[in-house]
Length: 326
Image (tube, rainbow, N blue to C red; front, side):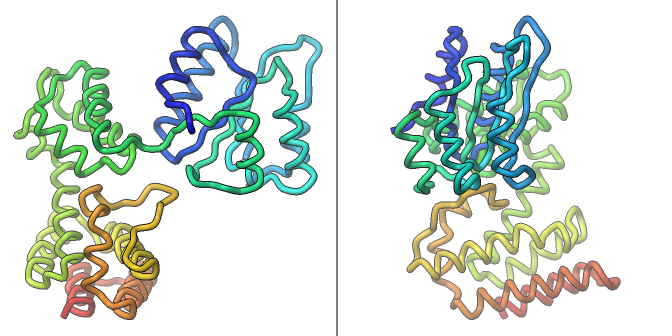
């Protein structure tokens, strides 16, 4: 059972800093929040000594050597190790040995993006350290986070605005915070944000139209897809800007199709609104596996053409819609 991040942060605020923390979950905001909380508490009266240890850039030997190194002044150091399961073999064992008897002057924060990881390392370290959950909260808890982000910026907000923001950006707190920050900056000196502000906010309007278009495509609605597609491609989208979310849409529907209609646990940010993502299994039933694979190949070809020759975006998009839905 993982520790709630609020409980872990209260402990840090109280000055109780452990030599090792193990974060599990893929929400970048919660990861950064906890790391910065430990850092600000640890280095309140001195320079920050923070080092990121990345297995994709460093060998297992270098990572272990950094953790074991000491200096003459026994100064405190903060290490952040991402994807620990990638440290394998002898150095994976050495890392676990370090976790059993850590250097008391070093603070190690281990970050595993995969909440469901059941690798040998993950099972072994959880016997030593209780993990802290940094997974994106469930929908019922997202409202309090949204209001918190607005309050941070000294803005009051209508509950309907919060509901709309959760629907569009509730896939991660990082995404939600980023959009709320842009909306608050756009609103200027006004202290209250309401429905009209959300409608007028150009960046939000763009996202809203994009998700309406993606929803129409996912529903197999040809006429609506063409109508909205023509509008957004001439107003505020390009074919290149649509390729990433469209590819994610058809990939997720294909995954659901391959998993007998269930939506598998995702390990990272997916550029699809929460409301659409929750209906992926339903949408996948409207397409055959062959059609989904065909759509992905079409998007791959469009991307190559966009990067090599001049193409008319509207023609490319309408052609794609008719190829997939027509």
